[in-house]
Length: 351
Image (tube, rainbow, N blue to C red; front, side):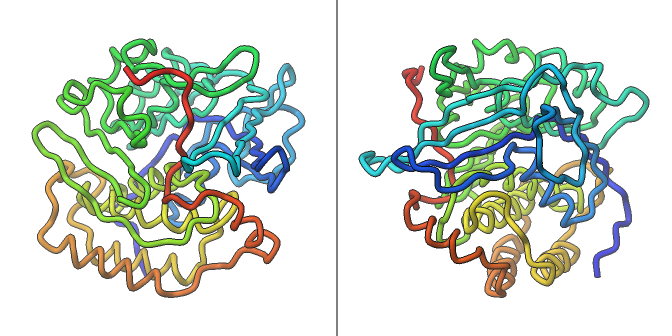
């Protein structure tokens, strides 16, 4: 059994939402969504002390371990993810139907500090001043770039992307620790400038992820998987990355753990359910691999035994995880299967 020699603390900021998956305008599944929900399943699996700041409307009907703030002036954030049998590319059109209230600095804790802060908004709920407050009260801040660069058509609700330099958040990048982006979002970042100031991690589905930090560029291997639903893959990746760092892993090993949880997530529709025995085996491997503590300086180079850690996690994955009900499996055949990503078809040209 793993024993935490240090108790890492995390602050996770981002709204819960209601996700509806549709193909050819037919509803396939509905579930709790939002990056915070997916990250929670990973952090809870590693028993990491976490505070979640999320807002929902009074219509919110899900049970969650970390209770949200309830707004009586707006509905819970609602997304429709549209897949089409006519689309040749394996992507989706994402629409924001409702947006709950934004999270303000006054919503954040005032009397404590956190080792890690995760800014993981999905619908524009994180304001520049809120991220500023997170930077002030957290030692290391992780930002999912979608929280900064998503914009929403005022009529259709379709999600598009703007360049980071035009987002109103660009000036804060030198003060954050990690910036996570998908391969579709990466062109909206000035990579050469961003990697000078923080560690940029770009996820690329079935190809794993790439770490950029100053002059260092490292490819991190993926884990083979059969995709059912790409929703939440990047969120589970981020949860795995933070869990790894909280347990003393080097950055490349923590990113490998992120790839592992991203692969597990796409094997199910909606929030993943991780088998407890599998989680324990993963935690045992992490305990054997740890190189430091949460208070130590981060290690960015691949350890010499990085490949062995990859093989060890691969052996763990051979153990069964909880299976989806048959109805979910039948839906899986209707969804794209292009790897562990959530590409968004953007109407905006890449700058």
